[in-house]
Length: 166
Image (cartoon, rainbow, N blue to C red):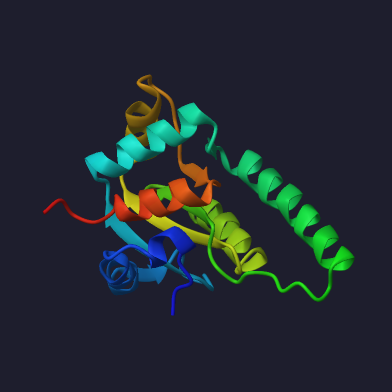
């Protein structure tokens, strides 16, 4: 069972998103450990990701993403030590969107992030090249193979944006 962001759980389209992510799930690379849905890019998702990057609710580049997740984990670990009786919420609040043309090494590194932060990280591979994703998100010729949405409300909206238009 997918642990989707809280804002998405409250949405009537929750089951449709959950079904979409589950139905299109597969391993990122041949020796991967985590299931990741592979879905088409939608206009709504492109708009959501552009807005998230512009507003500072997302970042791109795997090294920056890994650093951000590690920094957040340090804060969570410190909080857990300070208040051990307060349970950590096992619900995805970060969504990693990946271009569909990454190398096995790239996907192996992404799979490692998913294994390291399973409580709060969900990934989705988008059927788009890194060049096309960069163009779509920045309006320039720029290679972008990974985008992390780290605001939970924006993450919920981005997942809803994966649904095909009615």
